[in-house]
Length: 257
Ligand SMILES: Nc1ncnc2c1ncn2[C@@H]1O[C@H](COP(=O)(O)OP(=O)(O)OP(=O)(O)O)[C@@H](O)[C@H]1O
Ligand SMILES: [Mg+2]
Image (cartoon, rainbow, N blue to C red; front, side, top):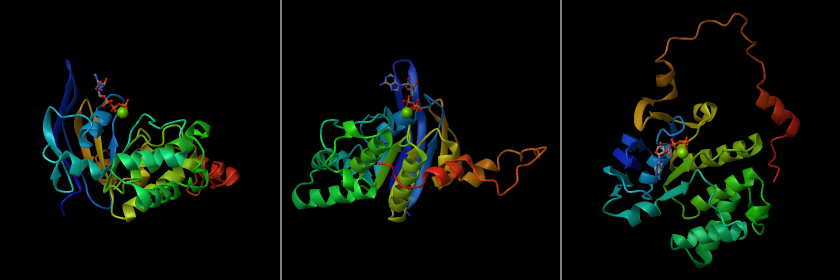
């Protein structure tokens, strides 16, 4: 099966600094690709090239069979981007924010309204459609950010640290949204510093450092590269709850806002 997203040999230099030095990655329909790397590894620059915001010095991107260099419009219409930095209009309502992004993709009229409603519902913000992001919590802003990237119903969704600064309730709601998109056959690329998020979500993982891919594979393939850890002196009981279990048991799983 041809991957929905194929990036081959991407390179980008800023002055003397080689931000990306030959990164290739692929994302299949119905898969979540975890993109991991330390600060400055080149993840956001890679995402920017994949979605056509930054022109690569070398390499190519194909989206749903179209080459970004030859058919940027066709590629960009099939991509949704959730950038690392929040990019919302704070003084426009959540609905107007979403409809503004939808209009940029050429949606209008009843279709724009329907897609906007679906995107708001997908992130649990239907009740807050008329409110402005200036009045939202960090988790709500992140969820609205995702909704803005979904309004044109993209085949490929790129998420650059979408859970930065959100509580476990919002993070779990975001995961549910992403897993529903995966089940609907979308290809997702998910960038984060939280290893447990990638362990939980990703079908395949690409680890980058200094602008290069240093490892890729499934979680099992990657973790079997190292020898097993030595037995702990006193292993914790296997049924022990995690701190998140306790937190959620006390505060509930309901979204707060
Ligand atoms: N517009 C730019 N001009 C100059 N240098 C840049 C620019 N964008 C990124 N860089 C540099 O390129 C390198 C990769 O940056 P990038 O933002 O892609 O890393 P990242 O993996 O997303 O890091 P983080 O985890 O901190 O978000 C860094 O050294 C950064 O300073
Ligand atoms: Mg980044």
